[in-house]
Length: 299
Image (cartoon, rainbow, N blue to C red; front, side):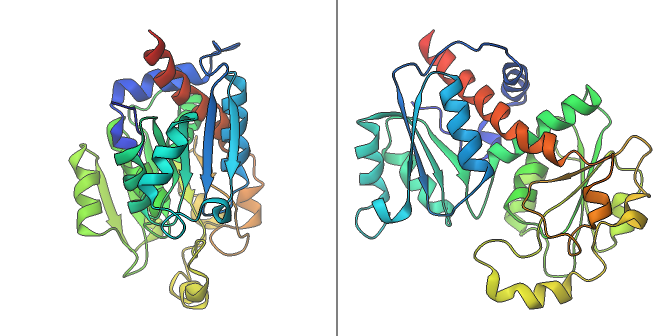
């Protein structure tokens, strides 16, 4: 069976640890030599396209980025037939989509691994990059606390599950009505996450090693923007809030950021900010994951 990655808990803790190790391998083996990788984009992205294309190239492969109008998943052709077709040519299918159901449908028909490059439910590659950034900073996951301030979105969901898998405490602060669903919370607690939710950002951030946030209105939520700006008033990660975190704390954000909304410019540009290391780690973590699955396949 192909090694699909649709959510971060498709990987075990030991596999994640191995991917983190492989992310730092210099001169990695060319496990994708003479192989193609199809990268389907329903949603545009700066970091996802560049990190995935470069990770594939660094492993000897040839990435082909496909725009939504070139395929028309669910309109010109079903997701299953797209997957069957692309599997004829490519060793890997990556998909950055609106609905998580699309990556599920691709994975049921593909004979090549399908990698979720983002869906409305999850963002596993971002979670791997986040874990790599935390590991590089602290050298351990044990005893670490991640505090997420903002909407309980796809990024937060995958990060919370990833934290649970690796033994990191996860806290979230969000306004009323913007928390995890019951099923999401069940998935988070199901991997053993030490989890807490509050509507008080100060409570969540106090003593945390990592303070993390994301935009309040994601792509596809533009019509909700004004309401969200009002609802999230008081949830900006500014200097006053960040000062409540631990002495060794760092700030993280999956980008792009909206300075003055979810985070102040002073925190973004501070010496504690690791946003650019985190962005670079999107490439290293993706390469580590691909090396993990294709090295295993070639053994």
